[in-house]
Every structure is written in C-alpha cells, then in structure tokens.
Length: 416
Image (cartoon, rainbow, N blue to C red; front, top):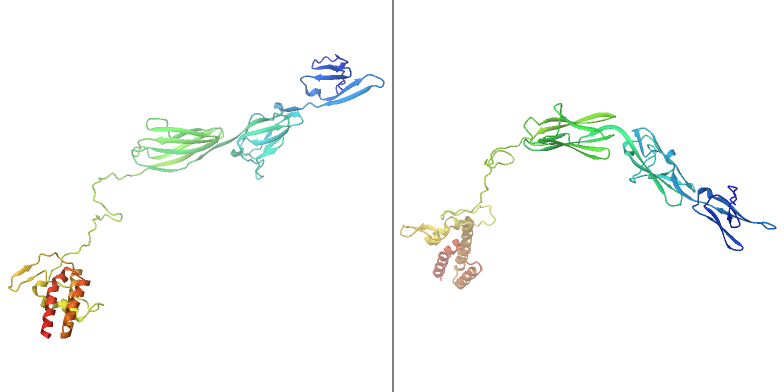
C-alpha cells in the first residue's frame, strides 16, 4: 500500500492497482517484493507491507525519488535581454528538481562584474535573480545561469544582455600628411549598439568605392573600425578635411580627419655636397704633410728652450758650415766656386735639428778630449762608443761625421 496516495497496490501475488509500473513477486513462502518501473516524482512516499494474521504484522519503507534540475522557462528571462545604457536590469532564472536546485550566475567570458555601481567586483553570485544597477556598455555580454542539486546532470541557461547606446567616434590620428602621388589610409573607431551605419564625406559629398578610394569596416563586438584608403593623391584635389559619420537608432555623431600635403624636394641629385649647417660646399680634408726644406736653412733654438746652450746655438748658426766645409750640406758651393747638388733625399726640419745637435755635441766632446795629450787615446775610444750607441742618427748626422772627426783629429795632433 502507498500511504501518501492511500492506494492499495497488491494482494498476495496479485496486482490491484491499474498502474502497470507496479508489480509484486514472491521468492519463497515468506518473502514478497514490490517492483516499481520508471519511477516518477509522485512515487515518493511511504509504502506499507502488511501480513494479515493475529496479530497483524506491518513493515514500512520510504522511497525518495530524486530529480535532476530543470528550468522553468515560463518564469525565467528570455535568452536575449535589451536595455538602454544607465538603466537597471533584472535577470531571472527558475529551476525545479529534487532536492531543490542551487543557482549561480556568472559571465560566459569569465570576466568579473558588479551588481551595482561602486559595489565590489565579483566573478559569480548565488541567487535566483541577477540585478545590475545602471548598466554600461561594459556589462554587455552573455551571462550563464547554472542550476545544480547534486543529481547529475547540472544544467545552464545562457542569457545575452544587450546594452543600447548612441555612437561614439574615436580618431587615432586627426592630422595625417602624405606626398602627392602616394597612398594613405584614414581611420575612425566607432562604438555603438545597435550597430551603426557608417559612411565618409568629403567636401559635403558622400564617398563611394572607386578605383582611387576604398572604404572598409572591421567589427569586433560593439566596436567598428572605419578605414578609407586613398590612392594616387592629387595636388589640392584630394587634400582637405574628411568626415567620418556613424548613425543608429539612438543618435548620430561624426568626427574629422584632416589630410595635408607633404612637400617633397624633387631637385637634381647632382648638386654639390653641402653641410647640414649651411650652404657651404664641403671639401675633402687635406693631409698635413712634411715639406722639403731648403738645405741651407737651419732652425734656431729659442733661448727659452730647456735644451738651449751657447755651443749648440753657435754651432747651428754657423759652426757647421765653418767646420764641415762643403761636404756637410745637401746643396752648396765647391772650392772652385761651382755649384754642387747632393743626390740624397730631402730632410725634414726635425731630422736637421736632431743631426745638428748631435753633431755639435760630438764636436765639443772631441775638442775637450784633445786639449791634453794624455787624453788623445780616450778621444778615439769616445768616438767609437758614440758611433756604436747612436749610429747614423739622421742623414745630416751621417754627412757631418767626417768633418767633425777630421777637425777633432787635427786639434789632437796639434796639441800632441
């Protein structure tokens, strides 16, 4: 017997009820079993098995029929809900099941949301209703209502929220420049819902696609990128202010993009090279080279120089010519008055100065050693050491050594 329905089901092995889903079987003389096929929620309740004897014996059992959650569409929001920006919206989700289902709201893209402006940002909320205060375009998207009662399967309902607002245009570059004969692309970004109608105007004329101009629209959600491609720009004809316009059921807006000409210098490439600071012609840098000096020219030592001595200055001024004769110069006069020219190379001013100093020092050393006869031997030893330590310092030194040595030897012999 089903107590909740107060309905007699079977007697002994005979089924009394007219519901074919119930039947009884007897496995042995003391055991009876009640079978229920394709159980329904109404089958939930207490069942009594009674044995008619003195006294009667009763056994009570309880059957709990669990039901997975199911949505009640008549009491739930539609799959698409539209609302104007800054208004409140209420999303409803009703579900049935045994036990009672638990309902949770979340966004389909997993992004957080707020139930009211200034409230805490959440990723989900547990409630049969979702109320959004003062919605904005950022609240637009799909919301999921998930119902579960630990009886599989769980179910979900998808509700798309559309937020309507008037078009808003953003221009990345309001001033664009390009030379004549080139191509350029102008761009405007439009945010609007419902999607707006977009078009370009120039000089109060609507622009359409042609061989020299082409329009393009790239949509991403409620954002649309308007592009205008201009080919082979012509002087003054294509330069000016272009207007991008967007219009939907809530309003119309427009913005400007100014295209100006970039003047390119198309002069000849054969102009002289000029510096970046002016119009002066750049000339190649000249090397600072040593020039050959006159063989008779000898630099004079400055009296303020650290290496200045009276003997060196006297030697440089005229001592070399008087002591060495014609053989010590690159160019001079012979004893017979005829001109002689050396076959050697020209000497730089530094080399002549170095050879003159060393020649003067060597001459002075020889004369001082030759002042006494006992130092005559040291004269030759000193000459050998000087020649060994500094052999042929320069061309001038080499040409001067014979005259210096001869002069020193003559002085030594006279003293001897």
